[in-house]
Length: 456
Ligand code: GLY
Ligand code: MN
Ligand code: MN
Image 1 (cartoon, protein in one colour):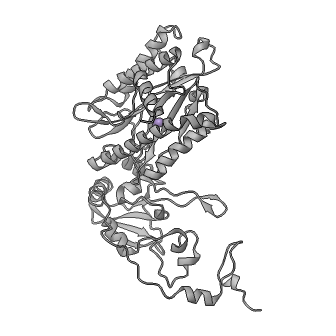
Image 2 (cartoon, helix red, strand yellow; image 1 turned 120 degrees about the horizontal axis):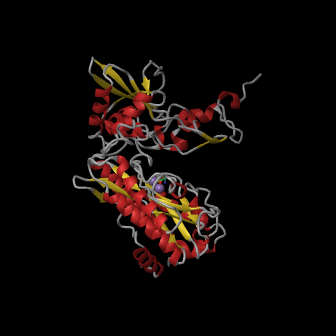
Image 3 (tube, protein in one colour; image 1 turned 30 degrees about the horizontal axis):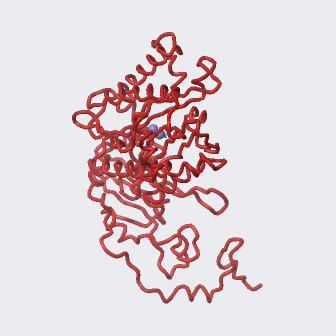
């Protein structure tokens, strides 16, 4: 039987078979196309010190830090790929083409390590993968560096992923000790990282302005929350890699659902909108900011009352930030204000105990960096039970979530959710607010919304 073209080269259901003549035609007639200019990553000068700190923690052991694998979204469509944060931090590589790549730290004598980066290099034009491979082929998904280019980009020795084998070693995805070490090493940010986080915050502030400008249109849409998510997402994709986490666009009582990401509700001008969103830069650092805004542009008296209490709690939390303070201190300070406020309102009999948590639930902040909940594998001694250090970046984000069906609350308070979330870097003296470009007080928010509505 004559071999069919389709059996020679596998194609998918809707692709026409390829002939050998076509393959031969495709293999020739291409000019060389090296990457032009200086391809060295801006962060390449910083990653050797990061790897050296990791190396010092695991003398004599092989360390395996994969970027992660592509995941199928449906049929032959993959989810957009974002490399693991530890891999990005150690190599400086952040793009979608990192899928499947692996950094290996090979023990080099009893003390040091040699880093080797296993990558899938660009396929030569003579290799049919260039036009046939839908997942990795250059004709389908774009240019990848060859081995020499990858070495110039990173300053790390690179080898082809094919045929790497799997010698034993500690693997970030399987070894809790290695994962915690990598989380702990990332707790204090260097100046370049703080700069990237500031960039993320600045783009996020622009996204919040876009949202406020879009409110007249969003208010008319039956799924106004989704409209807002889309407007913020446009800014995030235009300026950076995308959003650092799923945007929470929660109007009215939806704001009482801590991670409301369905975003399928309408907007009512009598309600508050809780918008929790962050742009992730191309370098993969994310902001994490929440503002709670009156959809009419003006807070009602009861909305203002709830807002002012959360703001006072946030101020108390921020005032507790300084090097040497325990991580738990700012949360305690914020919750004390909430508990006292709820007692003043008659919702609680006393501020003592943890009854206030019915109305707050969530903790008041977390480390921020490459991951929105950054350094999450750090041991409690280094994070939850640890002390703050200069160069750490964190959120302070107290909230009140007054559920619409909570019979312990006066009727007028039910269904109001407020969170105020800012990003701060710990300095020698205390903390610097990174997200101060966005207004926080009710008066400032009203003035800001009013000015944006008038086209300023
Ligand atoms: N957006 C998730 C958080 O605020 O922690
Ligand atoms: Mn947060
Ligand atoms: Mn948030």
